[in-house]
Length: 165
Image (cartoon, rainbow, N blue to C red; front, side, top):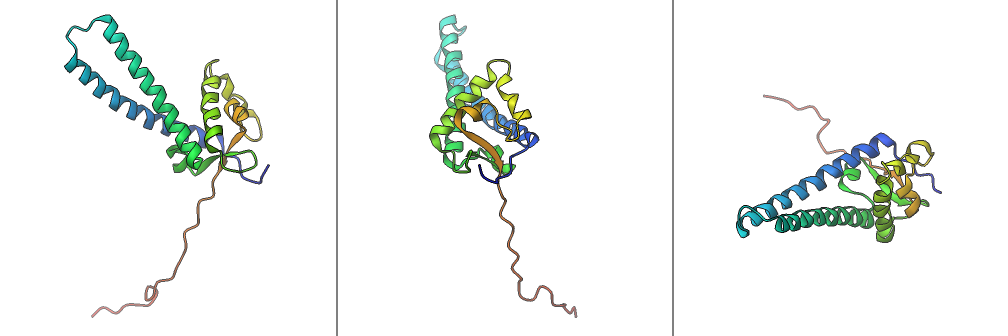
């Protein structure tokens, strides 16, 4: 392990909520467009088979969007937009970048953790590294990412008194 500081549960939950809002907004936008297109292309009232197909496509779109969002962001840079805003990142246990394979395992682990009433997330509240089942499955952990300190470069003339005429 490294000396990276483990991210707190409050920060992780807020990042999770931000990410869920982003994914839900994107899903809703495309689902609404799909429903409007459906209304234009199909006869009204809809038959049950077409409506079931529309609902199935909306669910598949949601799952695909969710997978792409989390796997691409975590695999590519170790952070989703929610994690970026809160300066936390997903890394391997030794601090190395997670990568796409671990990001995929972690995404599958989310579903496995959530299905039994969210019990897979419980270990994250009680272990020192705050690792849930998804982290155990993928060999990852969530850490605080150092925010680069702002450089202070003195500008010429800023500290000199000015005369007003």
